[in-house]
Length: 424
Image (cartoon, rainbow, N blue to C red; front, top):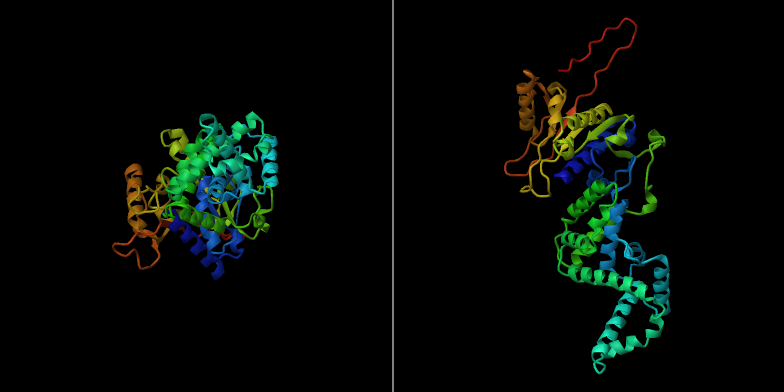
């Protein structure tokens, strides 16, 4: 899957730097992908392996708005006293809670020595007690009576403010109750449904990208299958480990900086890579549905545009190009298998070095398709193959990967004659 793919990239990159094959170190290695959400698993693996990295033309996965929004909700559910996270979500999606209302409830909480979250909870308790009094004056719990002592303080809220705050409390009460019965992935799904966050996102021009990032977050949460708050705490701890301190990374890296002076490994989308070159490039996620993108598969013109993007990505490598793709869509082998990109057949077999996984058979099929389409091809058997143990019978195969051969050295001296490679 994509986790194994990212581990392969990290392992190969560290080996290249350690062996001295890349003179510029990590700063001369780039990882290129088609869509922004693909960076999540790479970032996670790089952090765990101590590989310095930066994202060009974009933001780190856990710094993206929609991810911070969802995580803020989860943090408040796990810890109601997290005032910073509460401030982020109290009016998200918009529910009529303005800055004045927030200021009032914060002052109310401070005056009564409680958290902002519990101040809203107390407001709900007071309102519920009043409704109960109207129904039956004689029935009032001791706790409700104690809360009513603060009713004078509670009057600092206008009717409109109380309505908005109680609406928010109703949402949070539902989510807190659900958290006791859900796994983290289920909790994210419930959160989106209850808050109608998906409806809120649809108004954003970057909806597709933001929604894809949320799906990637759900995928990350699948590794924690513990039900209840214990599972939620475990997931948030994993996120905190990967996300690290915000001060250690820039939230956004612009392309007008001097990329060559940055000592970190570069992560970027194909679009962000235009005009840049690196000694070593890892082109990851090379599957049909990713590159070419699934939205382009129904249009010939769109597929050709995707082919041009693939060409851009491939030509960013000055010396070595690794092309990798996951073999499964999910985290488990019984999930949907992925088909390698149709663009792989455009690469001459003589330029390919098989490095891992059981991709030799896959590549033979790809080049056979090329033979059927074009009437001839370079037999994969002529391509170099790195010796290795292969994939043990019955075990899950490694992510498929190929490596382009190094560019031939060219003699530019006066009178020298060079023969270029002919591509079919």
